[in-house]
Amino acid sequence: MESTITWTLGSTDPDTETNLIRIAQWWLALAGQEIIWQQRPIAENIDRSTIDWSKQALDETFAIHAPSLRGITLYWYKPDSPNERNISVSYIQLDLHKQQLDILPSSGKNYQLRITLPKIVYQKIQITDPQFGSLIQPNGDAVLLLRDEAQRLEIQIDLSTVNVALLKQKLS
View (cartoon, rainbow, N blue to C red):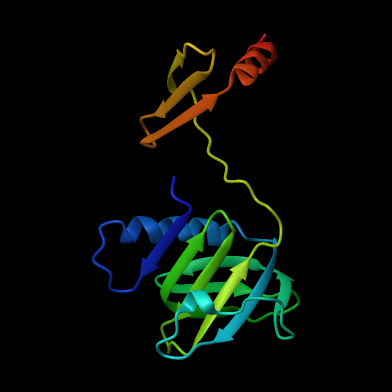
């Protein structure tokens, strides 16, 4: 599973809709979690990878409430605020490894937003009664292959000899 998911308004990429759905799922899962909200001005032809995202005075940390995605607009509430906030987007990039979302608003591209989870979050994948297979290599290492047809998901797990023994112990 790739760690970076990108969606761009008007893209003809066949994965556009799937990417937006995956980003929306991540955004919805932020409900009640503490996030770091950062905004940086950008020049028109800037290489966005050079933006300084180090902590600055106007950066905010708060628990986000009721995040949702409707169309191409992200919605949320800040704590102790009765007003729903929103931003329509033209570009979103989600880095699952770093747990951060980079956003360019559709209203004008003179700034970029970054929303980050300040704690480590592991991706969770649940599969029920998957198809599976295994292969023990000559050196004692093992390869487990789990497949979930419904989700079109295949997971390969490479285990050292030590972890094979540990797995056997935990399963007995």
